[in-house]
Each structure stands twice: as C-alpha cells, then as structure tokens.
Amino acid sequence: MFRNAVSYSFNENFTLTIDQIENALSTKPKRSLSSQEIESWAAEEFIKGDDRYCLDATNGFILFKFNIQTRVLPAQVVNKAVNDKIEIIKEKEQRNISKKERAEIKENILFELIPRSFIKEKCVNCMVSTNDRRLIVDTQSFAMADEITSLLRSCLGSLAITPLSALYHIPETITQWRNKPPADIELLEEFQLISSLDRTIKVNHKNTSLYSNQVNEHIEEGMILKYVRMSFDEKIEFTLDDLFLLRKIKFAVEPENKTEDEYENIQSQAFLESKELNLLLDKIIANISSIPNRA
Picture (spheres, rainbow, N blue to C red):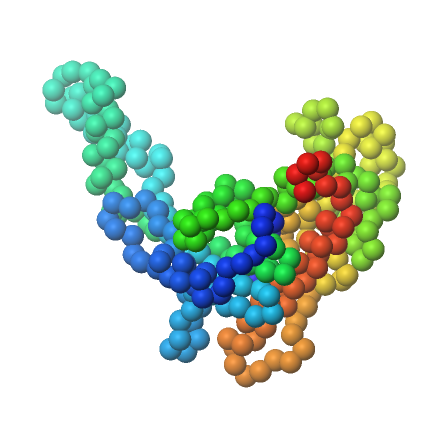
C-alpha cells in the first residue's frame, strides 16, 4: 500500500464521517482527458466484482487513492517544432521573428501537439488514521503531497492539517540516535552525512557501519546524518530523513488468515500495513522533540 510517507497531523479532532468523505471524493470521478487538457486529478475507485467504492475503511483507518493523468510533451519536441516553423517563415518571407510572434507560434504548436501527446497515469495512495488524527500520502515529493492535500481540501471544503515536519524537530535527532536508538529501531548501513555548516557537502555511505572510524571522524568534524536506513521491530524497513519523510518503505508483515478472495487479502494487507506504519510514526514521535509553540 505504501512505499513512501509524507505525514500530516489534523489540527482538530477528526469529525468527518466515512459517508461524508466518500460523497466528497465522488465529486471528483475519474474521466478521460479532453483534447487540450494537460493534467487531470480524480478519485480512483476500489473495485470488487460489480461493486465500486471511493474508499475502504475499517478499525479507524480510511484508505483512498487519487488518479493523476498527465500529458507527456517533452520540451525538446516542442522547441524543435517551434524552431522548424520559424525557419520556414524566415526562409519563405525573408524576415525576422519577434518575441511576440514566437510566443504565438509556440501556442499554436502546443495546440496541435497536445491532443497527440502520450498520457502518463499514476495512482497516489492516501490513508487517514482517525484515532491518531493523522493523514499519510504515499509520495516522496512534498510538491505532490501539497497537490493531493489541496485536491482533498477542495473535495471536503476544508482540511486543517499540519505536516509532521513542522511539528517535530528531526535533524539532530537522527545523529543522536546513532548513540542510542529507540527500542525496536535498528539503524542500518545505508545513510548520508551532510555538513551542519554547508549542506551542499555530502557523503553517501552504503554497506558501511555507522560506527566506523571514518564516520566517527566525520561526526567529530561537525557532520550530521541527513538520512538513515532503519528497521522497526523487524516488520518495516525504511529510510528516514531530516524532513520527516519516510522513503523506500518495505513491509515484512502479512495477515494471519488469508482467504480465497483476492480483494479481501489485498484489503487485509493494506490495513495491516496502515496499522504498522502508524505504530512506527508513534515510535518516532515519542523519541524526538516537539518544535516550541507548534505542537
């Protein structure tokens, strides 16, 4: 269900009902792009037999996903078409092309090329934990997460949330965990060190002990950990960075009782992963500092 996690906290108690959320999502149905549309965002449906749902919910977890269709029109293709057109005009009419006319040519070229462009499609998974007052978006792009939350806000009318990165202080925490990691969290041998004075100075490590002499020297020179690969309770492996972003999440959990119904098995797996992911976030939050006047 989740490969990455940008996490938010609801500023108030979560009061929306499942029906309210489903009705809101249903106002953004999936559809085909029109000939001149560049992008389309819509609620993706869960399908079980002949039944279709905008969300799935159980035990305090609400799962839903957004479908994003984007036309792929490489800039080099557009620029070549524009330049070719300009060269034809120059040769035929023996004159230079003004900036205004070039812009008009480009606009006409785009109008011709957009309907013929390739459409790229992807789904972004989202989860609300009503008990933890938490929203999680499966992306490692904060820009994408902002787009998703904006779309969700437009569906619901309002969405009072704050990124966990704005509530909790991560940067020095990861480095401090090197000496005493939280219970059930193991720091693995994949990480990046950055200079605390110049963040452009970076040293990447893989298959290297966090406690090697080389790393000790870097830490003594003032470098801190930007991100570290970790394992939580032998159930989740992930990379945590200093922006409170979880990347490359891998789960090692499966439902105890599987059925012959594939949809039910997928559903059970998704909710189990949601539960474990929230337990992981609880563990991280319990071992880092709140930002004054924000939490």
